[in-house]
Amino acid sequence: MPDETREPSSFRDNAGFLFRRDGVLLRQVNKVYERDYKALIDSGLYAELVSRGLLVKTEELGAAAGVDGDAIQVLRPELVPFISYPYEWPFHALKDAALAVLEIQKLALAKGMWLRDATAYNIQFVNGKPILIDSLSFEVYEEGKPWVAYRQFCQHFLAPLTMMAYVDPRLGRMSQLYMDGIPLDLASKLTGKLTKWKFGLGIHLHAHGRTQQRASTQEGKTATATVSKRGMEALIDSLETTVKGLEWKPEKTTWSDYYDETNYSSSAMEKKGKLVAQYLDAIQGPVNTAWDLGANVGDFSAIAANKGLHTVAWDFDHACVDAHYLKIRGHGANVLPLVLDLTNPSPAIGWDNNERMSLEQRGPVDVILALAVVHHLAIANNVPLARIAEFFAKIGRNVIVEFVPAEDSQSKKLLANRGDRFLDYTQDNFEKAFAERFDLVRKDSISDSKRTLYLFTKRKTTG
Amino acid sequence: MHRTRSSDRLVFATLLVLVLATTPAHAYIDPGSGSLFLQGMIAGVLALAFAIKNYWRNIRAWVAAKFSGSGERNAG
Image 1 (cartoon, each protein chain N blue to C red):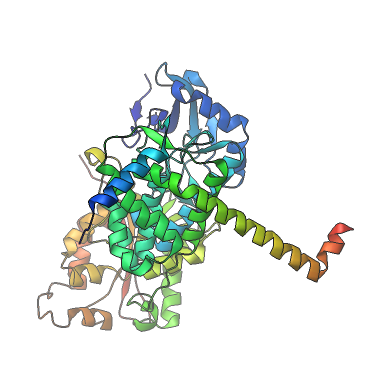
Image 2: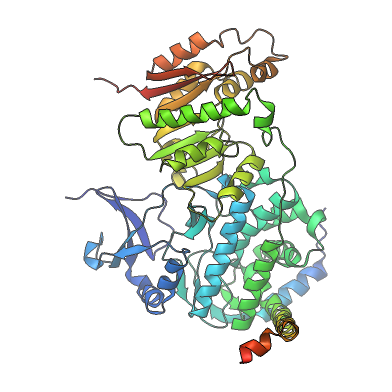
């Protein structure tokens, strides 16, 4: 008997579902979706979207490969290297994802189909480009009908983008609280004074929020308004113009100029980079994935990525992550810059806390880069060294970690006004904490600085 | 502060009844009655604006082609 499990996130749509058979991710297409799936293929839309890199490529395995008799087809999708979520995307990634959805909708309309959902969770990033991962998101277009996914598009994309552009990009994290996107009346309340005279936002956000609110107090309606095809094309064009008009430029943050203000001379940075490259080569066994924690604008993520590792570059600072995204946007960089607060990593959320994975559930990764990050966790956030080592052992098989001593000026800044609370923040205690769970592979002092670089590999548990 | 006057509500309810047609919307996601209503209301205006935008774009393209001389090359 093959080992089969349904993906816990795949239950809302009766057109089909994702499941794993012997570890391989597959998608069953159900009878109810037969007409639309046939149209997707026969209209040439599938081929066009795949050729433009807008839809994930799938291999047809036939109905016999289904889990039950309801299957008309089973698809094996090409795997996305890392599943990320909209609340982890920087401003320009979310904006590119929104524009990709609208581009897909336009191409679909030209082929007599359209999107029947517009959830941001159906978009993932591959090689710096957004791609739709759900090939069951389409249906045959019926002229006269309004777009059923209009509200979802506005809640998942337009509302958070407007809040990020006009108030603060950190509001992107609010998508974590609202699984079906930011309520439009809430986004309207937060941005109304700043955007009420903007034509597109006035319609798609503010008026939309008001009509939503008012309609919710009316009796349940099962009817739909009439929208011509020209009207639909105009609606999509207006949404596109509105999204394109949203812009965010970072102000200078602590982290955006971090390397200019740290203890690193350019030669020390270069030496650290060379050591990181050597350490990556020194890791035993297969190494395909890396997470760079506190990646800033990705200087060290690039070293891992250039060695062919799919590298997720996490940072707390939105300005850094956005700048990094703009650097790798649109080309095969093998890097994915994402926003993450390491002291409060993305949790498992959704129905039964089982729809969107936590950071830990998306690991363990082959190698963690934790460069100039431990002193921030230990001093600024009071995380004991032992707990840091424990966390790294949960999420990674190997760790390249830098120790920044208390005498370093960056540590001194963090220690200012903190008294003598951190007397146990010593190199000796750091090594002891990591020795509990890891074996030391390499250790080098970084010349031109007071810092030390380590390569640890996770000790295999016995018994 | 919310000020929802009863006349506003009456107008909205009347418009809702007028705009909503008889075709049911079968969707696995909730399209939201307000969203359907709004699309019915704005589609005509947006279509007009879209048409004007496209005409204007065509005129600009024609003028640009005329003055750059590319129109003649293309014609040939």
